[in-house]
Image 1: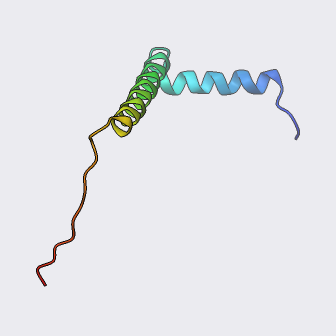
Image 2: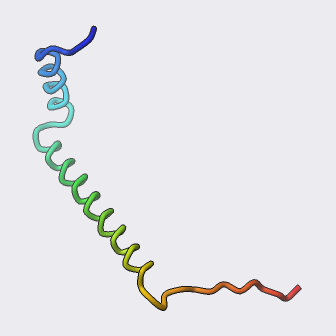
Image 3: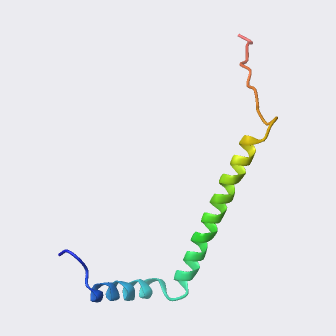
Length: 65
């Protein structure tokens, strides 16, 4: 029950290839890479905005009670 043998991994790989096909897996990995790149770009854009001087917004409460 402890570890899996090489035959177990080959069977799992064969099932994954049958389900997704050969062309689908690289396409999926490409989409994941694009998502990671856009996430990193978004995070660096947020850092650039927060460190820019003069970009603060002051909020004043409405005193019309």
